[in-house]
Image (cartoon, rainbow, N blue to C red):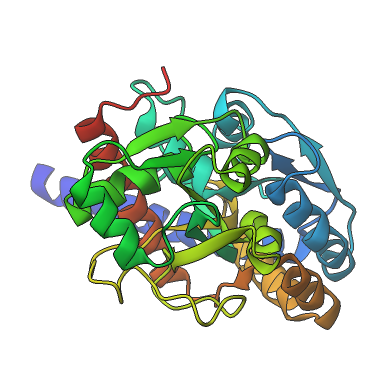
Length: 332
């Protein structure tokens, strides 16, 4: 009898669990149907006017129209983008607060921090990738470097003397320089600036030999002939500069660096809500007006292959963490 009673108790528990699961399914469906019922907020962890902010303001009107609710932008800069990003990671996982994340906040800053305030892999769920921008290695028109091969020859002949500027210590551009030196087997003289603007000014003036920077920022100077594009860091050549080879073509088979943007939600956001947000983002990025705006900015839209993009983000984070540790670079 006791054994029979135990079996009945277990059976009753199983029936209860099945009943709870069945009740949960309509709830998830209802959640997807009701979402969104109020305005959605996109957190931009940088000041207004930058690349990430422009991206958010480009997609927000289309998302608002598709979802039927206002989509508002909130700028919360600080700590290399980590303050605004952490606020989303630790916020409610209900789909109403999203992060316009970029390589700077999703892979670079956490990789360089000894005690990051969020885990970029575990604390976010991907809504979808948006666009990427390759970094370009350029040389001043005032120095005798006209190709990547000439750059490499000079770096090999003068270890630690070829100066390469970046937007600042710990920036994506800085890490791209460190990775280049490691993979090419040369020692470069990194010159950090407080932003791309002053670095480009000195590059044009010949105060530094070369620079790593986003192609979008360097493109006007390249077109005017004030600086020379030597190689891009993406896997494929850029449509903006199709004659400029990739570093992969130039003999560095594992070299790939892009700066990306994507839309992220807090981990734990219900799947039906994520599905609705992903569908809305796909529709927004397919709109001609949105595509034209991004084309004018010189960025490359990323195909909505979620698994491939998630895998890239994981590789990028692991890669920069290794580079930062080897080079002794931290943001703390």
